[in-house]
Image (tube, rainbow, N blue to C red; front, side, top):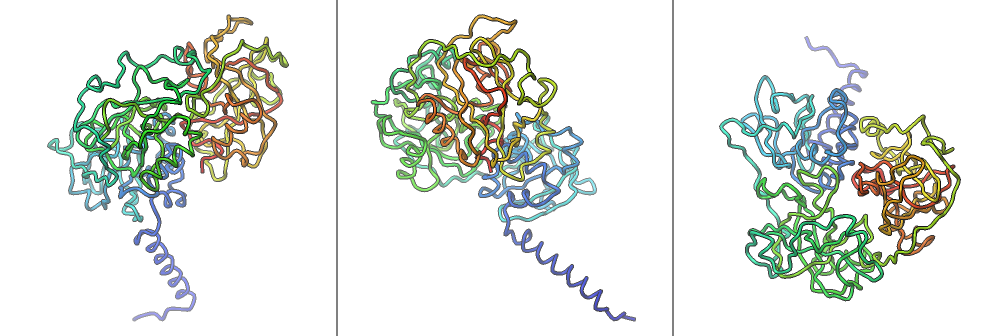
Length: 540
C-alpha cells in the first residue's frame, strides 16, 4: 500500500531535491573551480589556508585539469598542522595532473604528481593512497578537475620510488606559450654560453657592499637548454643585492607567462616556473621605471598575461624550502651569448631603486629598551613564536597584514621583530587598522662590535630602519605602494622591510627579527612584508 505524501513530507522532499540540484550545478556541472570549492567548503578550510599560503590559488582557479586529494581538517590536526616552509611541495604532491574519478584511479597502480614524485593507488574496499590515506568523500566535480577528500596527510618526502611494476603514468604536458627567440637547440653546460661568468653565485656581503652610486639592474643568462625547455638564472656576475649592469646598457627583458603546465620530466621540477619564458627586443635599463613598466613591455610584446620575470619565479619547484631564487626552469628557447634584464622584489637591485650612495652609519639615539618584551607595544612574556599550526588555524577570512614591534634599542641600534601576536602565516592586524610602516635602507654596513652582551652578526641587516607615520593598511595594498610610501618619507633608497631581512647576516637566521642602525618608537606596531607566506596587506 502506498502512503499518500503529506504536504510537510512533500516540502522536505522538494527541499532535498532542490539542494541536490544546486550541488549538481555547483559541482557536477563544474561551475566552480577547485579554488572556489576550497574557499567555500568548510571541511576543506585548512587546505584552503595552505593553498593560499603556498600562493597556488591562481593555479587552482584557472589552471588544470587537476585531481586534488584534500586531507580533511581533522587529518591536518592529527598531523600537527603543515610545515609552512614546505607548503608548495605539500600541495603539489597532493595534486595529480588530469581529471580522474575514484573509479578511474582504482584501475591504476599509481601516477606522477604535480611535484614529480609518485603516488601509489590500491583498491582495498575503497581507494587507498600510498597505503596510508583512504578516500572519505569522492568525486567532487569542479570546472577544472576533481576533488577527493582523504583522511590522512600525504608525505612527499616519503613518496614511493616505484609503483607496482615500476611504471607510473603521467599526463603529457601541453604548452601553447612556446616561441623561438632565436635560441639554440641545446646547451648542455652553462660554460658553452659565451655570456656566462663562472665562479659560483655572488656571496651576499660581496654583493651588498658593491658600489651603489649609479643606476644598475640585475641580469641573468642562459644556464642550460634542451629542446623546448630552458634554464635561465644567475652566474658570478649576477648581483641581486645592488644590480650588476649599468642602466645605460641595452639588453633583452626576460618575460614569463604561467599557465601551470607540468614539466616534461621530473628532472626539471627543482625551480620549475610552471610556464614559458621569452625575451623582448633590447631595451635600456633606464626604460624600466618600475615593475609595472617592465610588465607593460612584456605584455606589449607577447600579449595579455605576460609579465617581467622575477628572481623568485622558480619558487614552485621541488626543493625550495624558502624562496631562494637564482634560476628557473621553464618552457622556452632563448639565445646564448646574451644577458637578460630580470627584476627582484625584495632587494634594491632594479634600475628604479638601485641608486643608494653609502654614507657613514648614523647614530639616531632613541628610547633605550634593554630586554625583549620591555617595549610597551610588545604582546606576550618573551620571544615565543606563533607556530604554523596556530597561525594557519586562525584563517584569513578578511584582509590582514603582519606587524612587528621593537625588541631592543640602544646606542643608535635597534632590534625589531615578532611578538606573540605576530602571525606570519595569514597576518595579524586588519587592513583597516593604521600602523607605522617599517622601512629599511640597506647600505651594506658591516655589523658593529658587540655591546651590552649582544652579537650583532646574528640577524644583522646591514642597513638603517625608520618608521613612517601611521597609515591604513588599505592604503598600501601592494608592495609597490608600500615602497613608494617609504621613499616619500625617507628617500629613494628606502623600501618596506621584510620578515627575512635579517636572514642574510654574517650568521643567518630564519627571519622573525633583525638588527639595524636606527631609532623606532617602542609604543607602536609596524607593518612588515613577508615574501613566502600570504600574510601581506595585498594577499587576497
